[in-house]
Image (tube, rainbow, N blue to C red; front, side, top):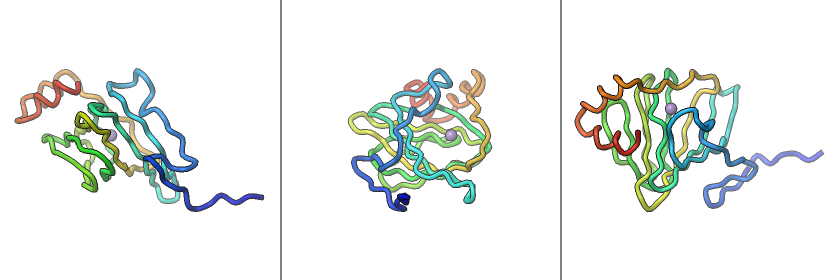
Length: 151
Ligand code: MN
């Protein structure tokens, strides 16, 4: 009986024995050019660690939910909207996305943006913004241009 190694090697932003998955189900929500790898899924820790990577210019879905995200950028540069502000992010930055904060990531042109994201195994389904949520977000300083590019 062969035992699985506790160490899975990393090369070119892929991990051994980890499938490269679509970010979300097609048609679920708006997003562009993202892949997902589930690195750990441990119900006894109530935690799941994923690696997301967006191609240059790609972006995640603008959404919010009850569960928290703990994010660490691993590669590239981009911007993230968290709650009511847009931040520049780069390698090794940590991003805390609190419950019910609107959030969205966008990769800069010219390089992919990759990040780790820790979540609960059991979590609520993301909510998408309504037209009136979007209108409210667009009124916040600095958000209008970001949202025009990504929504
Ligand atoms: Mn989310």
